[in-house]
Image 1 (tube, rainbow, N blue to C red):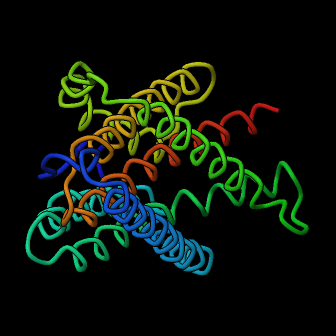
Image 2: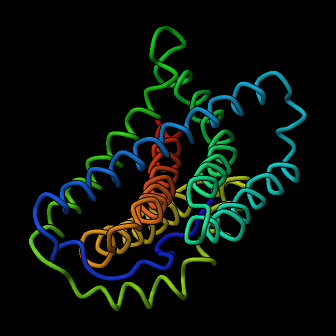
Length: 244
């Protein structure tokens, strides 16, 4: 799982381009982002199915290794490729790694959804759909606000540099070893705030800093930011459902 706000080597300037070129850039970024999210969920769904057939893979130590391994791949193996000479391969590997981590979350989310909304029809997928809708709505609102002009997010950048990695470690540990009650809900709310700030920063970089030729790198950062935010929103919804 990629850490929030970890924008790669994105340079300057699509907002200064002619409207047609700017639209082409943003359209390409949007298409890659949508494709990355779909691919991550395809991989995640496959992993969730494997987990349902092989319960021994739900061992907590194994889970920690799989999720932290996915983080390492998406941040330290795939990102250099995305920002280097093989962005397509890096994008494919990085989003697949996110999907592996997401598979564990989807497996438990479907179980909680079935418990709360019934096992018939779309009941088991209710929480996943709710988290996906909230994540998409958040990203659209952020994009609309940023489209009004560049924002000074230097404070967010500094905070993410300090908080990004520790937050990701705590996210994984608190998922594998859940913290119950109000403390768990409060901690997850903090994770949502930090990952939301990371997505906001990434979107600002893409809209006001990125340049043509960096469409895949820009899409990678948005995809990672949205998946991290989705993770935290879904975990919060799961916690709230268990309190009902």
